Image (cartoon, rainbow, N blue to C red; front, top):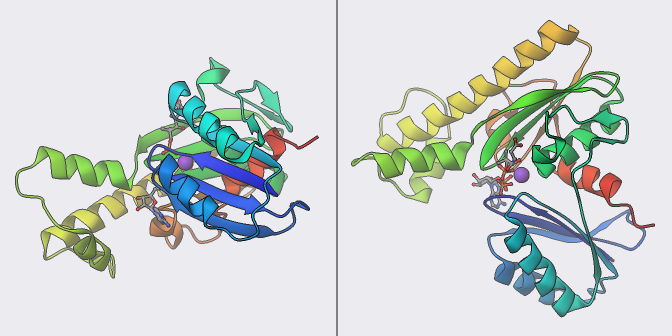
Length: 249
Ligand SMILES: Nc1ncnc2c1ncn2[C@@H]1O[C@H](COP(=O)(O)OP(=O)(O)O)[C@@H](O)[C@H]1O
Ligand SMILES: CC(C)(COP(=O)(O)O)[C@@H](O)C(=O)NCCC(=O)O
Ligand SMILES: [K+]
């Protein structure tokens, strides 16, 4: 079996593939190394042979996680690394190694699935957009605060914005103007994410007309999905790219 990990700034997304790589044996989202180990150790029938990983965390933190996994499972671990060009996509950053690896892998996955021009939108801790032309040139992208960051900035830098997770969840039943603080903030931030997504779509149209695919991924993708009809929601897009960047042979 193969363990795949996507270590974002807030959560570690993990899944275990059957050795054939055709089926998912188990998967989850955790907020710490300890929770990851707990989740894996609780799986009956787990038998790991390989692990591949992408991280946007500090090198030290990533190394620590790799050490923990090697100690726990004795597996070989392949970590996605920056690249100037891969699978027909050319990294557009002035310094290619500075492009977030989760963005890079989602782009590789998106370009392969699209086999044409694409716009890749990822809504996690940060919200990101990346533009790839039909011949694989990465034009660059945009980064702005995602839902967790917007919400927390408001909570941290105001005196009176305080509400709990239950109120937050309930607030998103609709997007009409809020009549409570939770509604006003949750709906306001959601509309900002949608506005971000729609302005990327407009830019993509100005480049490519209607000849492009839109990919939507990340833990908060669902908040914008119905504002982007025609976009493909691919929750595991980073894993698609991870398998391309870290093949087993
Ligand atoms: N099953 C889930 N577990 C944790 N967070 C989730 C889940 N589903 C949606 N989310 C939301 O996804 C966001 C984090 O997205 P994610 O793509 O995991 O971020 P990152 O890659 O930056 O860690 C949070 O706002 C969180 O509330
Ligand atoms: C933009 C990001 C913070 C997104 O991270 P995430 O929200 O997925 O945790 C990450 O891709 C990153 O640290 N990138 C490096 C800077 C850059 O891409 O320019
Ligand atoms: K991510």
